[in-house]
Image 1 (cartoon, helix red, strand yellow):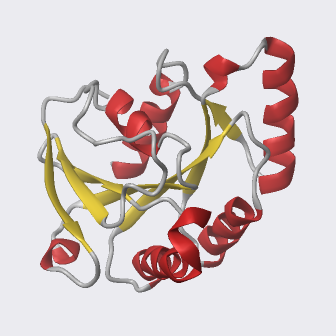
Image 2 (tube, rainbow, N blue to C red):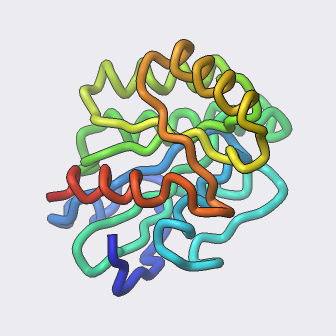
Amino acid sequence: MIVTSAVFVKGILGTDKILREPYRQVAFVGRSNVGKSSVINSLLSRKDLVKSSSMPGKTREINFFFVNKKFYFVDLPGYGFARMGAKGAEKIRKLILWYLGSGEAKVTLVVLIVDSIVKPMPYDKEMTDILRAENIPFVIIANKIDRLNQTERSHNMKAIEAHLGGAVVPYSARTHKGRDELSEIIMKAIK
């Protein structure tokens, strides 16, 4: 994917006219601190278009980035962040469910990002179940594989595939491993 332009447009917390625009949307979702922002930045060949933080739970809105003046990358808040409190975590969960299930968004593909170092959590399984129930195409990305040796990587990839029930693309936002494969999947989805 050759990126000629990418700009932040806006963050939303519910119904908005941006959802009625005729552009396809590729949404990025995952637990807090799995590297959603870093994956998006690596795909866009940018360092800090999408703001990232070492503190989980930074993204609280649904953020839209207009890519190549043709489609949106949509950065969803991270789910499952315990320090946010039960009320805050439930609010984020409902926002994500609304975006995926309301029918207002033109979701072409969801990129579900999991941490390759940590076993998939019940939240990750719930997300794959929701995506399947809503018939939303998705790809699973196992980020941070650069932090694992070959044996750990092989073991963890098999565990993720078994737990979430699908093929997984190994990815490193830092070294860009998997970027070409993910770019190709995205480009096929938006055509």
